[in-house]
Amino acid sequence: GENVEQHPSTLSVQEGDSAVIKCTYSDSASNYFPWYKQELGKGPQLIIDIRSNVGEKKDQRIAVTLNKTAKHFSLHITETQPEDSAVYFCAASMMQGAQKLVFGQGTRLTINP
Amino acid sequence: DAGVIQSPRHEVTEMGQEVTLRCKPISGHDYLFWYRQTMMRGLELLIYFNNNVPIDDSGMPEDRFSAKMPNASFSTLKIQPSEPRDSAVYFCASRTSDYNEQFFGPGTRLTVL
Image 1 (tube, each protein chain N blue to C red):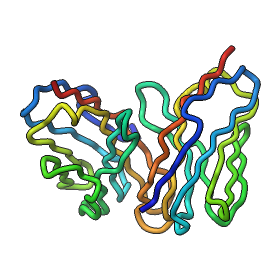
Image 2: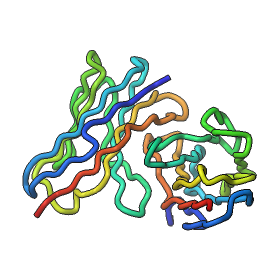
Image 3: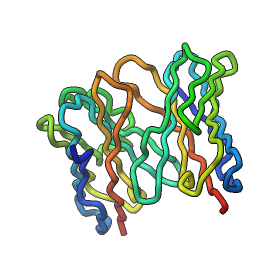
């Protein structure tokens, strides 16, 4: 089955700097890669996703890149703000059907003022 | 819509007791997922339903765990008997076939003493 590895497990950056979180996946059949943000005491919330037919996707300060050949994808957050502090999870699945998400272990991002 | 609703938000019980967690998905969503989150294992999919029918329960850890969805507005996850290693945060999520995003509830934090 699918296995998703996520790095780093913790990341601390200065406000205004960029943050990058990386994930690798094992199943070449996976073609849908969402990123979720989880704030303290809340459930995960989708922030951006990418499909395998796209190499990069941007939404304001957030971007995701995908390298299908290498089976890795990354989340980039620019101009970080204190409200970006949270735990971020990558996931992988098939687009078709239910989309059984397999999650990475999570990255705790701390933005230092 | 109020989003995915879970109850209770916190549950403390003693080993051997029966525990029932409840979920109300977003109206109109035809997929419902139960996840468990622990420090050791991260976010794991336990079971999912499509149109109230259990499709894949391969993530259910043991026969002590069972889930039902008697109608489109309600699902339960039951643990009987509960054990200390079941202590975790349990999330319910739902989505519609028309869109990719899974919407997570706030979770139930279960502590088994």
